[in-house]
Length: 184
Length: 181
Image (cartoon, chains in turn red, brown):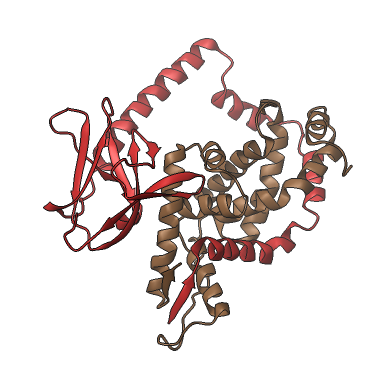
């Protein structure tokens, strides 16, 4: 089936509102239930809970310090493991010597990426192999209109000086590039 | 208590006035429920999460910085509660009701498209569903969502764009072809 009058923001807003409205009957009297729960919540703790609490939040400064050091070592170990296994680089889209060039001057940046509708807004890294501060990426894109933005050290840069035009969406700019048959 | 200002209600709540907190619940329960539902996708769980979020927020109210926007702080508490609940939940994440069309060639009626979009949005992964709900339903700005979700604004923007793209591709999977205007 085909729908030619697609306005995604309007339809998405409507889809969210409908689901929430359908479930809203569950909120009837919520304030009374919250007040009731709070009024009965502040009961004296059992000895078991007091012991558990002394373990979780010890009063002794030496024990607290030992907890902090232990937690830091565990976090370091987990961080190393995550870094090794979870952040394996994802395969990049096919690059070509000839294609659409994305280039941005960002001297001093540690990481520059491009997100756009050509990648379903998934970040693709740019490279600066010679370290001159100009980050580049060549993508082979089929002819069409593409919206995109750069992420410079995680900061949104929506106005590419090389863009054909800009559009304002969700309170910020995104760049637009038209790719023709010659893929430039 | 309808005409009392938010700040006064918060200050009275800090002094232990549960009726004042009840008024806060009345004012923010739709917002809190929407965020909880965005994380949990289950009405009953979202109701439990909303109740627990208001209880937790009341107990932690002395940590709230009065110079910050109260709704954003309350959303942060809600998201934490709902995510903890999601982690503890043993049963699998419920899938929304599936939608299929009989005739792929016909122009879809608005009602059918509406159902398809609803299914597509609510079947998105939570990373994309939650920012969409906060942006399109709660009316939060990108910066407010970033604060509530403890993310960078650029990450929120990327997730919003990607969420929209995923809705479109999910519709394509369902056999709905959409042309942007």
